[in-house]
Picture: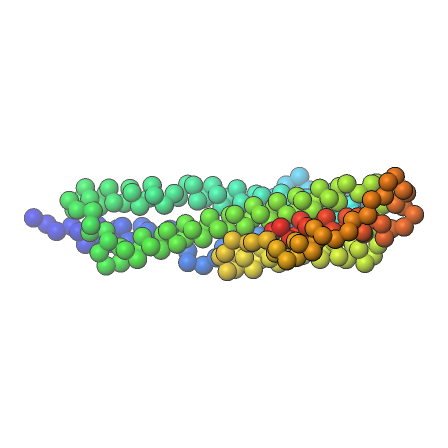
Length: 237
């Protein structure tokens, strides 16, 4: 009787190893040139911008820019989440490993052979990779939710009203904090968790009630009213 356990083991191990990438997926980025029509005023999205991947968006100069950037990041990160989720579902670990065990068992008469030598390492590596994709997809979804939250807050600012220069810088830092935290979480392959100390400070900050007062008389009113809400969005990610 011909012993075919080793060839079967080689096939199984090679197949699994071919699916595995032990490194974190690079964080996808979107660029100004890819996302926004050239020389458009106000800045206008390109219809095909989600097919691109570049080096970053232009720094917002006003509330409209800030809202647009948050919306771009929201949709872009959501697309990355869906892409990774589809990849993970298409290569479901249980189905692949189950299929390999079935083939190995049929050829050798014993499922145990798959776990000999490098087979066990292959199975372990596959599930490690599967877990990494799941973690990274969840981080994209969380980042998208944070950007959606920021966009919603900025959209509530009445037309024609703006942050102060200092307030706009703080809002921009909020966007940057989300992208930076996403980069770090993906690099470390950990689920991003809220900054509870930062969130507590944002939630307890006094937000003025205007009672119909004309906020346009003092742009600092816009800062005081909306920056704490942006900070809450950032802190929850």
